[in-house]
Length: 624
Image 1: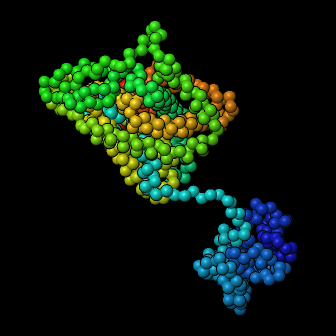
Image 2: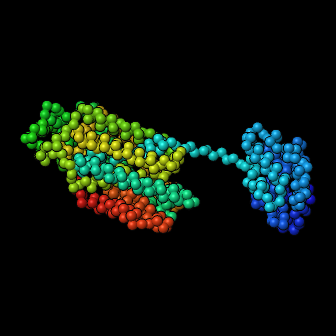
Image 3: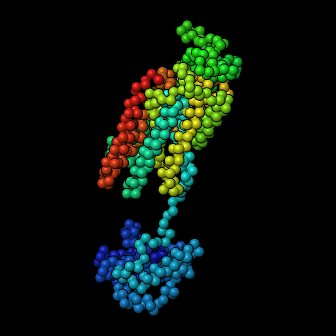
């Protein structure tokens, strides 16, 4: 039997006999000063090891007391020590058991010396371990102290902030808020292009498909997590099943969706900035028309202040529909850009020729900020803006009333139930119902992960109801011919309308705070994939910013049609992220597990074909 070192403030760890070349009874005890921490961890922290005929046995010292007691209390020379860790270890089990019977466990410093912080259950467990350890110290015993039971003084608690879990309400609200975006303003136009009845069917079908594929994204992520594979985003899932090319496809099409959103934001910001300037100009100079577009129409005995930029000739209705008269001559002559006689304000404040360039002065300094933390604090503005748009539509419905006559037969006022251009709505909805690249992040901190599928379904139902309220209600209450509805519903409202001006201000402020976040996400995805750094250098970042903003300016000047931009970008990114990657990964997973059947193969292949048809059909309506 050997005696332990008497040095203070050192943890005693027994060395293995084979490494020291001595028998179990003569093996010296080594302190951390004479052996590395790694070997101490392998030997079992604060444990003694010794060899028996059946192998190596590990046992804590008999004097092991409270888990909250200071380390010095386990050292033999420390005053007030609660026990002697140098208790003799006798390989002979009979001698040890007889000695244990002569010294009852109650004589040991056990729970009575425990710190008040130690629970009764912990103290009782330690007492039982010490008792069994003394009864049967041999390697053949199954009642030895586990290797991982160590005093908390040997553990370093890092000051990390614990991530709080979110309830189902927060999860549903986050998914709803993520999908609510610029597509909301194009819903009445999408309803017009699809037809009144067809739009409902298309919305229900697209909601079902997008929900199912988003569910497939969550399920593939959960299955890999349960199998021990560490993934954080859907791009990691694609990389696991499809290799590096799968990751490239997911990153590329996610960037396409972000680029489409950035372009639409630039077009809308130019529009709102232009309309805001026109409102201020009209209030200062009492001008009702800025560019000569009529904004006052008489329908029957009522006058409506609305816009129809492509005003069609409306004949007297023989079916009894109230006559829509042509507006009176404009009080301000339309500008003539060929001879340069347009007013100075119109030369300096043009929706497509000057305002898109003015935005550079405002947005370029914002997107150059490295961290988007400041702008993320304004996320609540998105919810406020959506609520205000809903209130705006409700107020206009109360002011205008419903204007639907399903018996009308003339081309100007007929309510079409089905139109061949319904594919335009499927393209818009591909982006309006898109959250597949963020659904894992939005549900990761769910308090009850088993409710993720239910919460995702509720969120999609809420999004669909919101689109129905805005799209169908505005379509039904618009007083003029439905073909007058623009790709941005606010373009049908004069700039002098106070409620519309307030809505544009809300949207402008909200988009100004979200635009830097979109640029940051796009920059982070591309730079991290290409250079393995979110911010490789200011040169790389500046080139990316100038390129993206240059594309946005070109589109805002020459093609400021947000509906068409939404449908093309939505159909393209939806082809990969909604209709192809989730079903494909599901089939690959089933093949790996040996559960691939024809009943599973056919419907998932149909979803992929629907995505291909959705994308191809957008090119048949280029004149919209």
